Length: 164
Image (cartoon, rainbow, N blue to C red; front, top):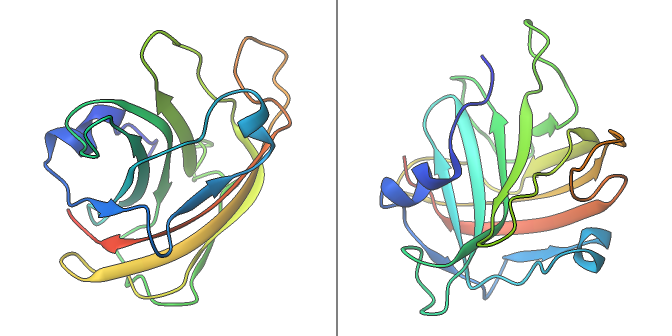
């Protein structure tokens, strides 16, 4: 199943917000091209996709502001146990990427390229209503188009109460 979750869906669903303290970090060479600063993270699991969104809102909330980075990964319906690792460059049976990095930044419509390689590893089990955590590293592909971040890296960690 191709990834179709719009960036705003996490906000519209009223997902839980976890502050930047603790296990929430975002860095990499992508930061040389666009700010990766954020004020909070949202972690959600809808039984088919795990979504980690980094929000940058002036009021510290998720209702306003930008989403400098969001990672959505097809995870299927199985348990999401600690130690599980997902290949962010894998393709599903229909040939679509299983992972998608995206952004929503006011005044900057540029999108990210496809993920060339990377992994996401769960540091703790992911279950709706419980605290979950993990970390990831990825490299964007060279697509020879107007996408932002070709060949650049992003690494991050996340921790928060998981919403649906």
